[in-house]
Image: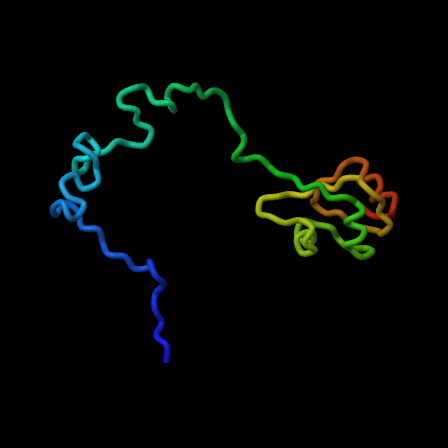
Length: 143
């Protein structure tokens, strides 16, 4: 019966430092003295040796709305016509169930590309004015 063996290179011995020249001796791989060679030594990220750090030199002005940005997925009327039955309710949940709208934090906007032949009820989904007209003309409604 074959034994399960770890692949070559998976298990490595711990490096023992500061125990003579045969190991990582003398400076233990930390270079020759200085702040980073001391125990507890080192500098914070972004420290530039006393020079004004870049993150403080570069001006930051104004407000960025990037973290709160809403990302809309454009959905054509022709896609809705293929995916939904006559009289179906098109909502955020139904779009996700039909795998038309994917991704967390994304919202849909229905655009007037193509034609709609079925009577669809659009509920709580952003819709362009032209798309709303086409949906109403086909006998549907936009809430």
